Image (cartoon, rainbow, N blue to C red):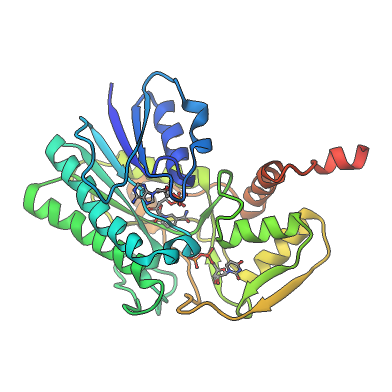
Length: 322
Ligand code: NAD
Ligand code: UDP
C-alpha cells in the first residue's frame, strides 16, 4: 500500500486531497498545526484504516515517517491569515518546505509542492505562462507569502539538482469551494457569507481587478494528474480555471445566486493587489490531458449551499415552505 504525507492536510485543499488519495487506496498521514485549518475538515476520517493525523508545526523537522509521496501544502493561503504573522508565514514557507523536502529525499519519496499564482505578483504578462518570472514586490505586505513561495520552488529544484529528489511543482490559481472557513477572508467566502447574512459586499478598490476561480474538485484532479506524471516531469505547472471575472462581476453574480438585491460598498484597494490574473493552462493540459470541468456558476451554487449550512441558515426551499 502506498503511503502519502500531506502537510496542511487539515486545511481547505489538504483535506480534499486527503479524501481523494484515500479514495485511490493510498494511506495518508496528515501533518498540520491547525493554525488556519480545522479538525472538522478531517473528522469524518477519524478511525478510518489507512488514515492518521499528527498535529505538528512544519517549521520543525517532520516526524521520521516512511513515505512514497509527500504533498507539501502547509502554509496559510488567505492574505488575512498570511499577513497576520508574516514572519511565521515566511518560516513556514521556507523551513516547512525545506523540512518536507528533506523527509522526501531521505525516504526516496515523490514530492509535490503547492506553489501559487502569487509568484507572478502583479503580472505584466497576461494570461500568465510558466516561463514568466513575475513582478513581485520584495518589501510589501504580500512579500512574506509571495517570496516564501518563490523560495519554496527554488528549494525544490535545488534538491532535484543536488540529490535527484523527484519533485513536481504546481502553481495554484485562486481556488474556492466547500470547507473554506466562514472567516477565511478570501474573496469568494467573504462575498458569499456577506450575501447570505444580508450584509453589503465589501469590494477593496473599484472592483475592476480580475481573478480566475477554480472549483476545488477540479483543482484536486489537477494535483493528482501532475503527481501521476512520469519521474523527471517537474513543471512548474499552472493549475486553475482560466474563466476570468472582475471582482465586481463576482459580487453581482453571488448576490444574484443568493437571490438578493445588489448591495455593494467600496473600500480602499489592498496594497500591491494584483490587477489581473488568469492562468495559461496549456502546459498541464498538453502534459496530462487535465482541464477544469466545473463552471463558475455551478461551483458558486455548491459553495453557497455549503456556507448556508455552515451558518445554520435554512435552505431556500425550507424557507419558502416555512
Ligand atoms: P488553508 O489555510 O485552508 O490550508 C493550509 C493548511 O496548512 C492549514 O490547515 C494550516 O493549519 C496548515 N499550516 C499552516 N502553517 C503550518 C505550519 N507551520 N505547520 C503545519 N501546518 C501548517 O489554505 P488552502 O487554500 O487549503 O491552501 C493550501 C495550500 O495551497 C497552501 O500551501 C497555499 O499556499 C496553496 N495555494 C492555495 C490556493 C487557493 O486558492 N486555495 C492558491 C494558491 C496556493
Ligand atoms: N477582495 C475584496 N473584498 C474582500 C476580499 C477580497 O474586494 O472581502 C479582493 C481583493 O482585494 C483582491 C481579490 O478580491 O483584489 C482577491 O482576493 P483574495 O484575498 O481572495 O485573493 P488574492 O488573489 O488577492 O490572494
